[in-house]
Length: 93
Image (tube, rainbow, N blue to C red):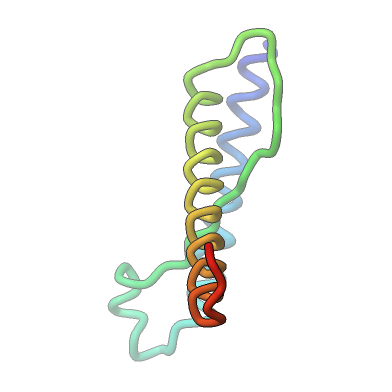
């Protein structure tokens, strides 16, 4: 029963979220361009946060992997900007 409830909750969340994004895209798209609507989209990443379970599922593995990759990308970007600023100011890195 718990798994069925959780599956239903995920399905409802996905459907409502998809509906919301479609409405949002419609509001941002000019009438003439609505024919090509499939070429435009808004992507939103919903990070679940830090979750700990006794046994993690494959889904949790994917979530953790995505979070780690996003953190890695952020760190590389920020440190690259810092390094460039140091170079502009002629400071040793």
